[in-house]
Length: 209
Image 1 (cartoon, one colour):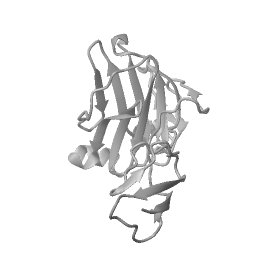
Image 2 (image 1 turned 180 degrees about the vertical axis):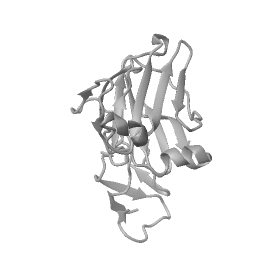
Image 3 (image 1 turned 30 degrees about the horizontal axis):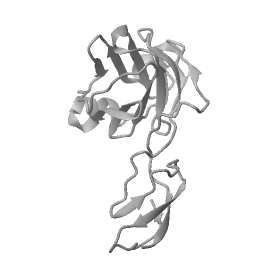
Image 4 (image 1 turned 45 degrees about the vertical axis):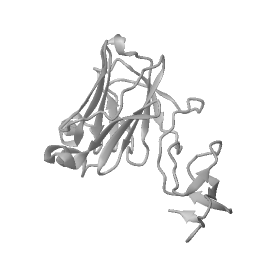
């Protein structure tokens, strides 16, 4: 067997570590500059399902100020409503299908990741929502061609406490026909050792791109 060193270059994953600094307090109805495609956002809440509260976030394709530009700059909104039995997810112009059930904790971290083709929501590292914009023409028109440059927490939001850029980790890293040490550092651009399984050898570049 042999050891191969790969440099992680192309994984964009989400983490839930709460030990890093960088949290910003939420101020409702205050627009802030945020490139969501380049910087997935994490929102911290202390709301359990029984609290009857909600996360309410607006997304803009440009500076929504002055107010006369707000309608033209608005891409849409995303809201997560907590009730006594479950969480309900709404995204303007799009149909949301849940990918997994979750169990909320005392403090929860919600990660929103957007590309030009889809939007994904994680709760405490678990994927709960995956929206493909092309599933409907209305959704695609609103979200696919528009890059998020500004965001704001709506006045309706009574669950969000703070936000920050998502910690970039790779908890779901998988390479076929190889063994990966479960204790490795899976940070973005970190170097790891991958051990080929029996009867397999490495072929090609030693860099993943």
